[in-house]
Image (cartoon, rainbow, N blue to C red; front, side, top):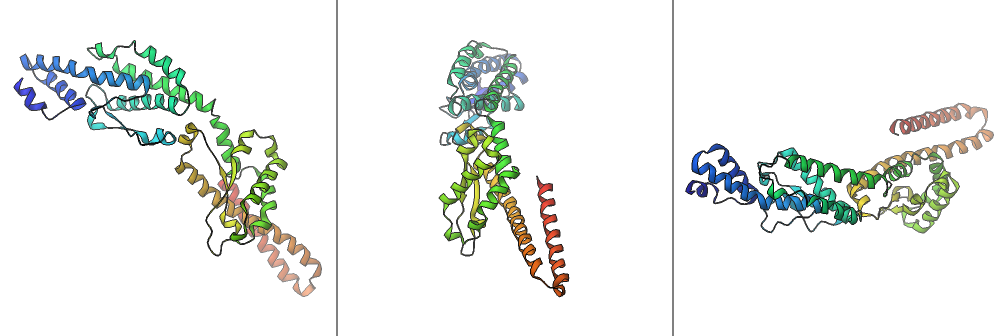
Amino acid sequence: MNKLVSISKKLKGCALTSELDRQSRRTDGEVGRTARRLYRQSCRPILRMLRKWLAEGAIEDEYDEFFIFADSSIQNSRLWSEKYKLVRERTPSMIAPEVASAALIAGKAVDFLRACCDDREWVLQRASKMTERDFEDNRDLSNLTEAITAASSEASDRVKKLMFGKFRLVEHLESLRSYLLLMRGDFVQVITDALGEDLDKPAGMILRHNLVRVLENSMRISSGENESEIDRDRLDVRLLEASKKDTGWDIFRLDYRFTEAALENFFSDRVMNRYMRIFAFLWELKRAEHYLRNLWEVQRSWNASLNSSSDQLFLQCAFLRVKMNHFILNLQYFLV
């Protein structure tokens, strides 16, 4: 007993359980028997916390002993990526690293379903079934890995079902592709033509409500009129902070809003900022294409008034415009 005390006196929680497990395997005689008895007893509070985590997505860890840490300051919109972390050094030896990761996903998914998906009924029904799996009396822990893996798979499947069903994840991805990645050609053509004159103005003269009206009209007269209402409700105009020499083209952005916590977890600020960066680049290409198309109209008007001595210069200008337009179109084709 003195040996066990001296070895484990500075340990607690999962670290203590792991040390007792090691001593029970390495030591024979009275010390080994004592270590095995203490090990089984020390497993009980850990298994109790684990069961609550897997069943309810909740952590009751007053003394910071559990191998999953929860940051209560994190909002639901960032729950999946930031709220819960696996503390490797606290993971008990009875749980393999990959199983600990599965446990993290299982409980996190349950909390996500309750807090972000409003799926409390499913969580309660599942919790009532899981209480029948009495982890505390599972002396040899033979079914622990199987129980954790099954819990992780079940919760993950439920999350996927809701994200693809209730929250229409695929439709939102298609909408982002169509509008923020400028893949809906007819809509892009309509809105660039409609906004071109306004966006040529200095940024300080741009009025957001005018741009929003143009956006709504562009969606109505393009193929967007056949889209679901989620596009019209979420697609919006964002104006960046302008510098002195900016025009409307420089500060204009299309934005796609998410108000549901479940979707905000998927489309985090980091993800949407990447969409914005891609949109900014593609929008500059559309700006160049718009100018080149307008230049073609100008060149047509010039053609009638030029004399024969200017024909060669005119042809060079027209050829240069064609090459520039060809490059822009091929770059867009390559990117998308």
